Image (cartoon, rainbow, N blue to C red; front, side, top):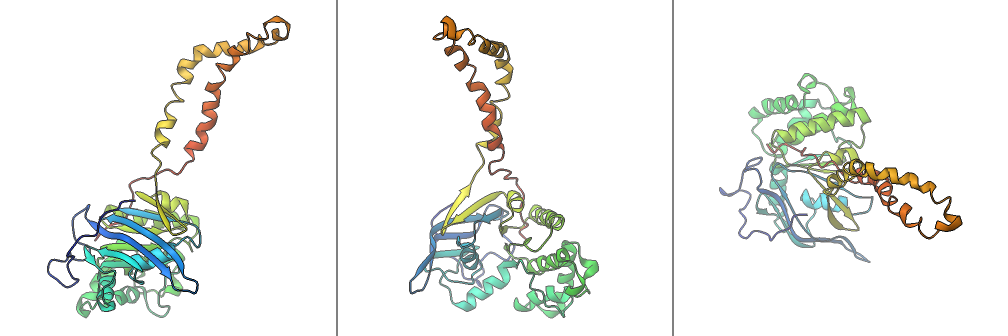
Length: 327
């Protein structure tokens, strides 16, 4: 995990110096947590998130995984400004919002964060485009701009032809695409996805993962909370949370370990003929019993190495640079 001190004198949401939604340069911090912790009031009090430092940069695709009860929901609520930390500071686009008044937090949430939920949360009696425009209402976007922007967001997820369909007439994958369009329409700095593929079948999960990848390539920043290893494996960074503690996952050791065994069988080939000497131990009981044992022990190590490689191949891997667009 990346950690760092909170920046001083962060601009206010409405100030001219504050970065605009979806704006900023690649590599700039979008989220910065500094010594953030959260404790649910008791009795007895429960420490759901232990003191944490975390930085997520613009254009990054980050997956957060962990078992039920590990603190994922608590972290999501903090990152999405739904809860205030018990201690520490939270910055979004350089704006210190950890202890800001609820009105300012709501403004940052509406303009700079897009949410995608597992259950879609679409209004059943409103069309796709009306559901997308709802996000613009909360962001106080002028009415005359809403329709065009909502259609552009639906086109971005390949669903403009279903703009006037009700959610009840859409498949699960189409409903999630509408939800993503709703999250994108205000051009947020950050897209937060809570189990976005949890209610989808395998084929649709792959399609949605491809969509998220295309959005990331277009420049978005994405944080995905998921139980699905395939979805997590397509992120640039994987962060595991357990018992309220975050751990950055890495598979750096996987690549080098696969190379040594390949050369070993080559140079070891001439030595392998010595392996047949294992037949010599047959006469060992007669007289050469003390001498033969050392000979078979030498060839022993080479075969054990390949046996250990398969587990390494299955180790957490595939931190492929795939992510989310920051628009």
